[in-house]
Image 1: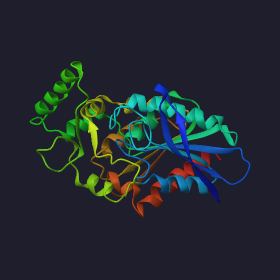
Image 2: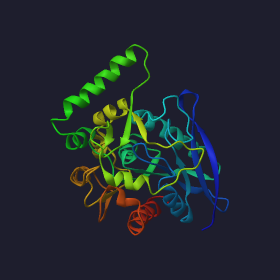
Image 3: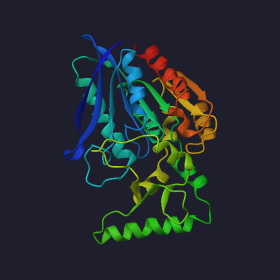
Length: 301
């Protein structure tokens, strides 16, 4: 199915707007719709267009937004990530979709990947406007992921950095920054994985979009406190599809599979062979996007 594409700005709390792509199938509608968002510090230019276009070709209105403080979305503290603020903003995007005259508000689905896969679990459990959800390579437990990523020997230095940032902000300092990813152990960074660097290097951002190579230190502290897996038993009766890699060490495979076991029907599981960032690459993309498309067709179309 052919579709139109346009840019949109969606009003969010605090007077900012979220920059979004809007894909609309040709025809009068009303159409089912899917709202799409990226993970921790990810922006839509990094692999999400292919998903959006596949959903749109299948007859869905699709909106893909960037979280506040990233890319062309508003926000005063660039690189700052608050999962609960992102969830609140995503609810505004759902409301925006509901109000479009060519969208059927009773048939709205949600797709989130990685950190936003965790958001998808929370939203599916707490917002019944969502009629089908896909959580791809989702964050399940920020505490457990952080525990595996930082050794006991490294933890005191990390906590010292967290605490120093809090004390500095009390005196009026701006939130401290750190690299999003670095394999240099002397550089403070949220991630140490070469696979993430390789993934980000696959994409060229538009000139108007700043590189998302730094985040606030407090974003990492919030991530360690974030436990979206606690909501998984509350998602039913909303249909949930989880898309999980066999060798994911960013949002670990075993945590995702344990969460899937706790989820209630209706639910589905799509495994793919590979690690976290393989979900988006050629070949694997056909598996991950195809499973999501079929899920939305089953429960929305």
